[in-house]
Length: 220
Ligand code: AP5
Image 1: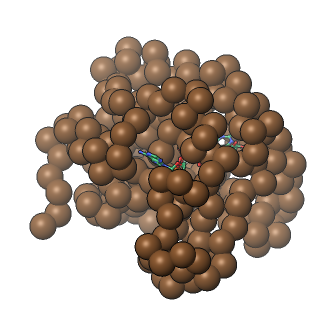
Image 2: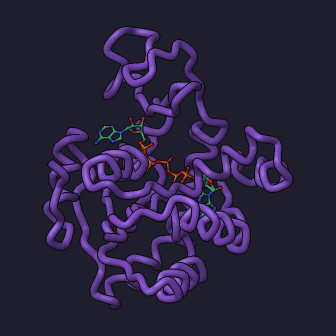
């Protein structure tokens, strides 16, 4: 099963992609995580994209398509993949369709996560992540069970993203509505779009996504 999680910044794509990957044995492919890893490793791509990402602009299609092709092949799972933050342009969507077709594979569903803009800004400006394992938290809605200690790995250092401030976030939203929102119509026309309400408790949203998936079966 190959699924795209489509939605504006802060819609909960990363949070839900991790749940889906775990529940259905899918590979989680996040272009944002891949690009941040390139920056942390100091690669040429990482240096090229640093300022673009901090501003909230999109990285060029050729860079993200190359990254996704490499990672898809590396992490190929029989169960499939959940794409988080990719595709983000019509060019990327065409490239993904061709990439899957070349591998004799296909897309099963595109889940559009709807969240209102004010809630998105509150979510993103309150986000922090574990520096060791990348687990995502929020100042108000998802704090570690023990203050200052990551629930998942026990790490004690947390970081915030350069683009998680209100100014960059408003620009990311503008970029989303200009470049990425046209994918909603693109996938609707292909009969793949399922829209769900992304507001509510994380587990409630996960249940809505599971219910929207075509004949999905959770692993025991
Ligand atoms: P990327 O890393 O993909 O960021 P994004 O799309 O802006 O999305 P976010 O990671 O901010 O949010 P999310 O939807 O994953 O929400 P999350 O689950 O973390 O991209 C970053 C940048 O990289 C782009 O701006 C661009 O420059 C570049 N880039 C990446 N992909 C690209 C591509 N394909 N093409 C070109 N450029 C690309 O949740 C957010 C917060 O809310 C968290 O704190 C979380 O705990 C909380 N939360 C989650 N769910 C809930 C809930 N139900 N209720 C309350 N709080 C919740």
